[in-house]
Image 1 (cartoon, rainbow, N blue to C red):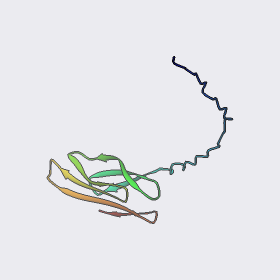
Image 2: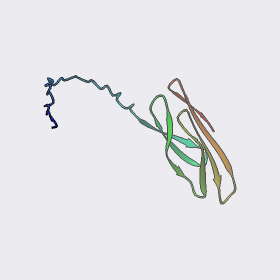
Image 3: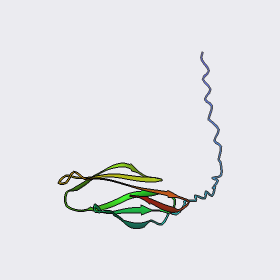
Image 4: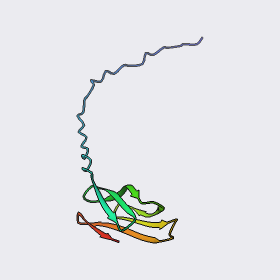
Length: 104
């Protein structure tokens, strides 16, 4: 004859615990938009956070096109070409210690 004992699993009650979590998020840097003239080419607008720069937009004269060689965070360098006159121009902005230096 087989003796089958049944055992009841024991139940443990655990009190819920709460743990406060604090998340700190850094506020985004304020962005300033600065416009710079580029010789006879047109103008360039940079987005400046005080520690980094990126190209925001350009406004070019007739026939001018550009290519971006570098777009931040410390340097923005653009190469311009006029498709009508075949004139070339280079423009570079560098940010260092919160100051933007321009090379035309």
